[in-house]
Every structure is written in C-alpha cells, then in structure tokens.
Length: 321
Image 1 (tube, rainbow, N blue to C red):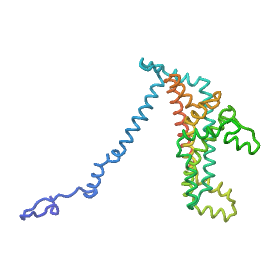
Image 2 (image 1 turned 90 degrees about the horizontal axis):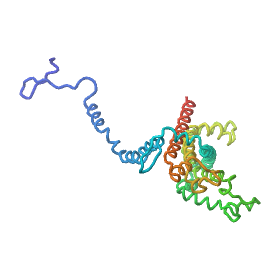
Image 3 (image 1 turned 120 degrees about the vertical axis):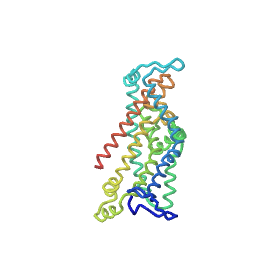
Image 4 (image 1 turned 120 degrees about the horizontal axis):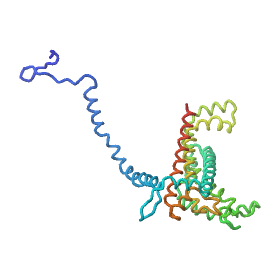
C-alpha cells in the first residue's frame, strides 16, 4: 500500500482510505444508478394505454389473422381450411369490384383533400384574430361525428327538385340530380362528402408546415419578379415536401378504410356502385355469417395499407437522400 493511500485515523493510527475506482466520478455513478433504477417509470404511465391497446386492438388483430385460416362456426368449433378463405375473397367478382371502388375513392379523396387543404391553408395563413375564428369554423367538419356528417349530406343530397343542392342547381338552370341514388353519380357524391370532411384536417397540418418555410426565400423570389403562383410552386410546395408525404399516407389510409359514410349514405348501392372493401367485409362477416372470409378480407386490406405505407416511406427516404 502506498503512502498516499494511508490516512491517519481518529486515534492517530494509520488506516487505509477508500478511493473510488478510476474512471467515472462517484456522483455521476450515483446519478446514473438512480436513473437506471427508475427505467420503469415511463412504462408505468404508459401501462393503462398499452393494456387497452393490447386488449381491444392487438388481441383482436391476432384473432382475426387466425380466423382468416378457419371456417368459423360459432358454438360448433372452428375448422382449419388453410388459404381457402383468401382464395374465395380474391376470386370473388364482388371483391374485385369493391377493391376497384375503394382505390378510386381513396385516390379521389386523397387528391381532393390535399389540394383543397393546401388552398385553404394558403388563404388562411397569418396571425390575425379574424383568421383564427375562420380556421376554427373551417375545422368544424373534422370534429363533428361522421354519422352526423353522413346524415347531413344525405338530406342535402335529396334527389327531388326541392332538395337543398338540387334547389341550388335549379338556380343556374341545371336539372335535378339523383346524387347517391344514381349509380353514375353516387361515387362522386360520397367522394365530395369525404373531401369536405377531410380537407380541414389537412389544412391545419399545412398551416403548421407553412411556419417552417424560410421567409427569406419568399422575399428573394419576390425580388426576382416571381408571381404568387410561382412562389407557391417553387418555394412553398418544395418546403412542404415532408408534410405532403405524411398527409398522403394518412389520407390514403383514411381512403382505403372508408366505411361509415358509405354505409350510412348508400350501404354499397345503388346496384353495388359504391361497394367498398370495408362494407363488403361487413356484409360477409356479420350479415352472411362468413366470419372467416370476412377476416381474410380484413387481413388483405391491412396488408395493402401496410405495403402502401412502407412504399411511401421508402420513396420519401430516397428523396431525402
């Protein structure tokens, strides 16, 4: 033992002193040990939400995947059928038509929501109090329950001449339309309803993204003689690239999973012109009691949504590189 390791004790005798090992100081080690001892604190706060997600979402998802490979017979026992349910879904003419209607509706609603949401955001950008009131009013369709929205538009789409929208069309000399009661206009009518409800949500995200666009670029473009449309095209839209990708994913998922407005407005009619995957799954699973086939359709829809999300993420990542 070296001399510097020996300290005199209270009675004068030499006693070895205790030194912390070389490396991290004692205080930092104590602080780190305390933090390591409380690693479970965030999980404790998350536990209620995680339990609810586990019980009401993840366990039913796992059961649906299992049911998609079975012939579900309540109270009689399920029978394993392998991929027969998937073959039934994929070879069904009704499923192919419903998938096509879903794609058309998703593309139309996604495009309409993005374009209208960006236009509203550009019009309402600013710090004025009046703009705040207008934004709140424009955002109301998002917070109103979808069932109320569907019933409101069902009344507005009344096919007779004294219907609300038909009355407005009569003022400009246009004849009454059947809207949701006409196979030729039912899909467009549902699309308009979805855009009306989804565009204000995209507007708020665009407003948040516009705050991150460099204002110096606007001034430089204005000095160079760029018009407002040119500034939007060459400054605003490139600055909102990440916002566009996020909103595209959200709007596409919302379009692929559309159900409530279609179910309440047309229930897939007339003549199946608005049948989408979700309404078809509902009818197969609950109305026809073919739960296995319905579960297979739900799994296919989930896989399509997952593939779309991954593809958009990879495309965005490649664009950033």
